[in-house]
Length: 312
Ligand SMILES: [Zn+2]
Image (cartoon, rainbow, N blue to C red; front, top):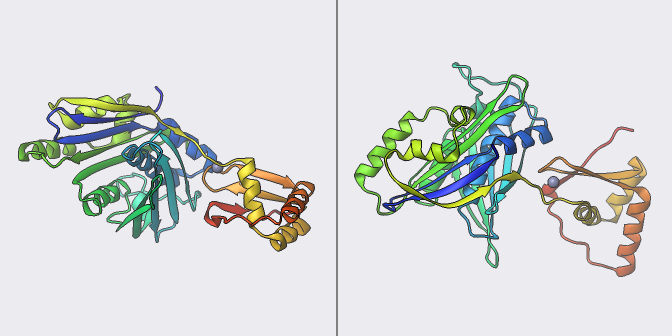
């Protein structure tokens, strides 16, 4: 079964509900970043949360979901758009195995205390950023708190990743349920009861449950209408051309220094772990071009790249 996301509204217009199966997306993230199980679970939850949140913005807009905790996981970032495209990384992909007393992957311990932020990047508008302190580090609970505290939308978020014994991803998925302003007391009570019965989203996905069936489980007897259905995928925007621009942004001195030391420059994309290598001649050609044009050196978001130190 392919990965996809659905966005629905109950016919009584009291609840907005989203559900996604993201097994293949998280599997690709695990393979690209070679994450260990706890890192896979943490990154997979952030990626799944980003896909769900990203489907709530307008077409052409994007969101960046960032978890900055004090734990060994470090920063976890995923950005997604309304088209169902997501990419993401975790600062420390090689986390040791943390398990709870019941044997579950201990994401909270890996994340620690800190902050969750959500930035909405909108066309023709200033970006909007909201942030909340992490309440548990489990990501799903933190996103729940974000919607309720920062956006004043009472919500319930469930995110799950199941990692196999061979480190690969067995299942991943999630949901967001949001109460709309007209939600009746009985609706809220019924929803709370249904939510109590949801023990593990990833197990439900593993068992073959579709996003539609997941929503039926959550919404019980309430009828709902599907407003959107989107395939979701891991997709990065980096390219060789863009990497070349990033090198130019380093400045002449640093370029020459790196070339003298390594003979070439390697650019690695944080988000997808792709590497782009540029030979000395190519880079020198670039410098010449830049000098000839006396071009302004483009502004670079250095957060997005790291230049690899290479052993010769
Ligand atoms: Zn990339």
